Amino acid sequence: AQSVAQPEDQVNVAEGNPLTVKCTYSVSGNPYLFWYVQYPNRGLQFLLKYITGDNLVKGSYGFEAEFNKSQTSFHLKKPSALVSDSALYFCAVRDSDTGRRALTFGSGTRLQVQP
Amino acid sequence: ETGVTQTPRHLVMGMTNKKSLKCEQHLGHNAMYWYKQSAKKPLELMFVYSLEERVENNSVPSRFSPECPNSSHLFLHLHTLQPEDSALYLCASSQDRGGSTDTQYFGPGTRLTVL
Image 1: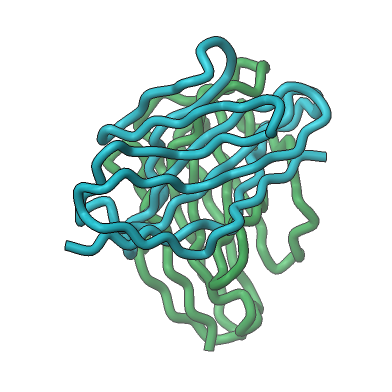
Image 2: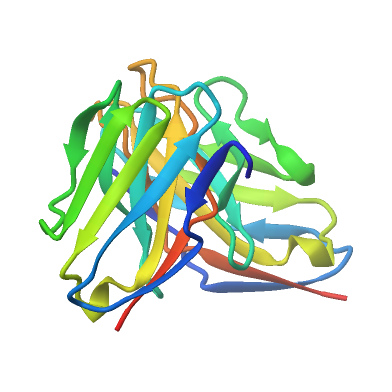
């Protein structure tokens, strides 16, 4: 079975400071990991994904994520937060062993960037 | 968000009504998905279609009936819904290459309220 956890309901950070949104996962095979962002009254927008290769993945809007196999984590990071980054962030996983097309999503983390 | 469009954006219906949600993808993808997003719950997969064939059905009540007439269009037919079915219904599409690494792209969602 595939599962993902986002341990923080909300993360608060000051504008200009680095931000981290945490995600851990559980799969039986190899993990395919995704980050999405959701702005109010909008659908989910794809930020980045890890399939294989370099553990540091760069994505849209200056975001990056680091895959750590030993800690089964895929934390989202940005060196300098913007107020416009305030949104709901979802981590998602797909297990290479299941053959399923569906993603399993975490419960989401609300990022609040204060000016 | 012009890649995947959903109509209507908002829908209010009574429990005895019959309505349909429409999704259209302009990305040339061959797989489409329905997800349900309720308050304080992770996104739940409802249905997956690949090459117009339903390939996953996540134990969804029969009052929700999907239809995929071609690879660009996906419908969700609703009848005799319950108030607890009120949620944001998200459509997504991807290019399914059979390797589980494809990225899903989401539409803006339909906000459904059942009275």
